[in-house]
Length: 60
Image 1 (tube, rainbow, N blue to C red):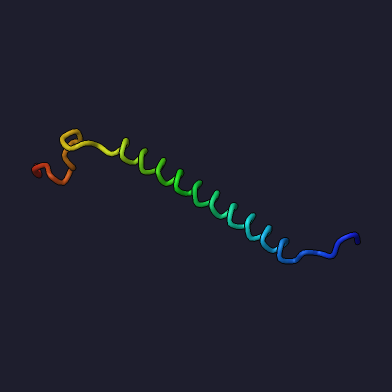
Image 2: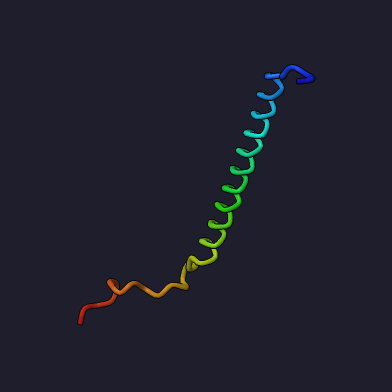
């Protein structure tokens, strides 16, 4: 072995990779959440556009 191992450097490298992976996962979750919210807002009927519910009609 030409150099003795630098355990602190190895540990900091692992921690850096772990933190980067965590940030990427968080960003992906936020993007998916925003996309879901946008589609829900677009699919929801606007006030006055929705037909009245069946329970609101008079019984025959």
